[in-house]
Length: 369
Image (tube, helix red, strand yellow):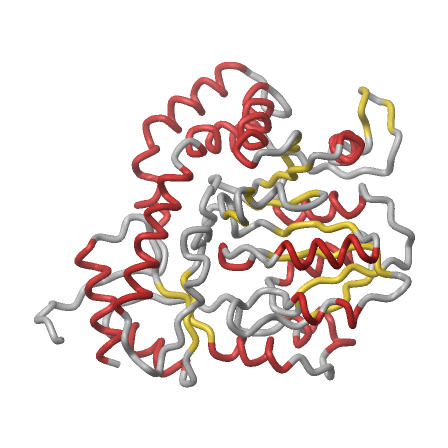
C-alpha cells in the first residue's frame, strides 16, 4: 500500500535525541560531582556497581574503563596457562577476539547459526582441545546465545563460560538476565549502547567472590591496598562522571528496551519484502534489540535506495574478523557462514526517539524496494 509521505530525514542513530530526556538530571548529577572534588572510584561508581549487580541479578559488578578492558580483565583474572585456547564466535565485533589475544590467550573461532547470527552450539565441541579453557559467548545485536546447550558443553569439558554482553543490557535467557548466565560477563556502556554513557565506560558482572576481588585489584594497577601491588594490573577504572550519568539512566533501561522491542515487533510483522531477510523472531520478548539487522543480497544498492529516501543505515559489521589485517594469519581460512552474514547484513534505525510516522515511513519505503 502506497502512502503520500513526503520525504523524511531519519538518521540511523540520534544520540542527542536519545539523551535529551535526561539532560537536566545529568547536568545536576555532574554539577554535584564537580562540587564533591572526588573523581575516581568514589560514591557514584559504588552506587552504579551495586545497582547494576542488582539489575543483572549478580553478586558483584566491577566498573572499568570500557567494554574491551572488561573482557581482557575477566580473562586475565582467570589465570589460565599461557597457551590456553578460548572459543569465540567467528561472527562478532573484533573486540571479542582482541580481548582473548590481548589477555595472552589463543582465540579459536566457531561459526554462527545463520538464523540467529550467534555462536552455533552444535559446532563448539569439534573445536575443543586439551588446551581449551573457556567459551566466550557473544550476545550479538541484543540476542541471547543458546545458553542451556552451551552450559552442558562447558560442564562436560570443565570449561569456564564468559559472556560478551556489550550489546545485550537487559536481555533475558529464561528467567535470568545477561551478565548472570556464566562465570563472568563484560559490558560496554559506549554511548550507542542500550545503556550508554557519554564517553567510554564498561563493567564486569560475576557471582565468583575470588574472581571479583582479583578484577578489582587488576583494574587498579594490581593493587588492592594503596601502594601494595599483588598483580601486574592495568589502569582501567570506570570514572565518577560516567558512573553518575549511568546512574541517571539505569532506572529507565527496561522501559527503553520495551520501546525497542515494540519497534522490532512492527518491523517483523509489517516488513513484507521478499528480498529482505528479517532477524529471528523466536525470542522477541527476551531480546534487548540493540540492533535490528536484516540481510539482503544487493546490500549497497539497498542502502543507497534508503539513503536517497532519507533513511540512514549502518553495517554491523562489513568485514569478518578472520579477514581483517589485524589477524593476517587467518586471512586464508574459510568461515562461509560468517562471510555470508558480513556481506549481506544491514542495520535499520531503531532509535527510541523514532515517531510512529517515521517507523511507518521506513516500513513503507522498504516494502516499495
